[in-house]
Length: 118
Image (cartoon, rainbow, N blue to C red; front, side, top):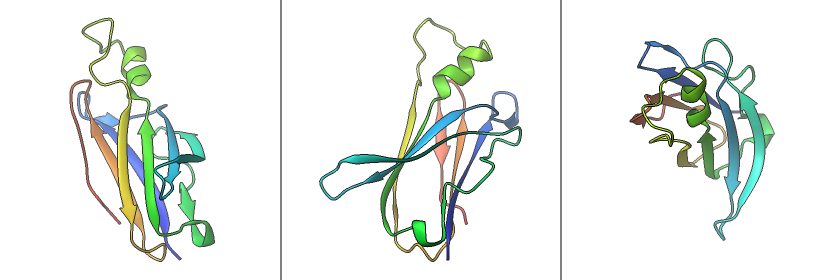
């Protein structure tokens, strides 16, 4: 059985993104979102538990929404009243729930990137 995990790295300071609220949604074939779990990243920028694992981790489309606007606001890293990036949304497909999917977010107040890890 596989699992889904995430990790946030703040490259403006070269450290894990601690205290970032995120939500994981399952996307239906009609493009409807259903909240699966909400979590907050720990001191290592990770969630304490996998977002999904075992029999609950099914093939399909998912979306993670990271509330990075509030994170950078707390760190006083906004250059304007309205943040350039407020929520980072990553929508991705899972081909098999038997595999591990790691979806990291590498982020600054102005840019982000992601990739599929394992």
